Image (cartoon, rainbow, N blue to C red; front, side):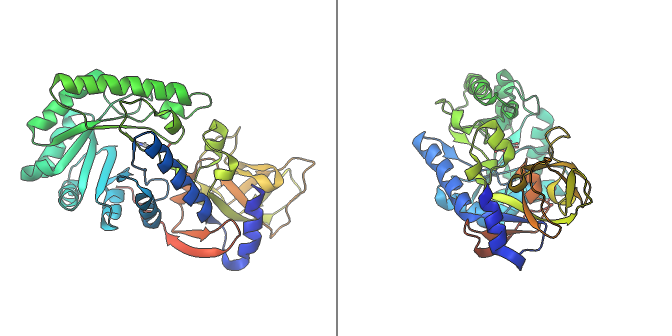
Length: 367
Ligand SMILES: Cc1ncc(COP(=O)(O)O)c(C=O)c1O
């Protein structure tokens, strides 16, 4: 990760801190590698855009071979549809009431759109929103495979799919998110839970004479274990940038990190820490007091505490200290909320050449 310091030095005053620096060559390689994995295993790749929220990067993923994109909310789906993506899966139990009903209907008329569903109530709401154009919408039933977030029990998937069919909405298949694979040592086991749950759900649809053409799985940490033949598609998001958590979990190496935050040391009062200008406004509050909120590899330090504008970089006694005014790279523990803090990404390469500035098009779009 020493290369981050070299990039920062090369970028010099072109960058006003704090700012997210994207290493385009690393990102391109990450996109290529995941696409290759999907191609080699006969899976469609439908990347989740919540990590980058950036139209330019979504286009790169599609150009590399992604079958479509995954969105986390209606705004993301609208923004990527307007940018030219023709096939979007809103992998969320959308409650299509009020203005969202009209927006959903409009979006379904211009994009091949599918939405996650996991309750009768939300399904009825979707049907009401679509009115006489129900056939334009696909639904994918969400099942829970162990994360205990949203999703019905696998055996109940068929009933919801059958109800969708009754309402004129096309039941496309099933999906799940193995969020319990995001802790150390849990990736492979979570992927096994996922495959088993998806198999049950596919059988449940078959009991209602519905064939699941979409069986959608995955996350970045579990992607490499999504090999079961029942799975037709994977939806990783973080892989495009990767972060310290991905390295810690073992699903990538430090050399695969494609985004870091450029920060400046603004205070050193001789404590065990120095202060940088990246606090929660830049990094969000992802992490915990024990592990910290970000890594500062050049000084073997980590962000022990964050205030809104102040980041407390804890240093080991023996390590050299960065000087006030010096720029240091912060590697986020979880990259997605960091990107959402900024209006633009600074696009560089590993040699520190400034290539472009790309808008975070869906920044702050919460509904
Ligand atoms: C429904 C859904 N699908 C896919 C993903 C992508 O997983 P990851 O961010 O680990 O790549 C997420 C992440 O939160 C998700 O919630």
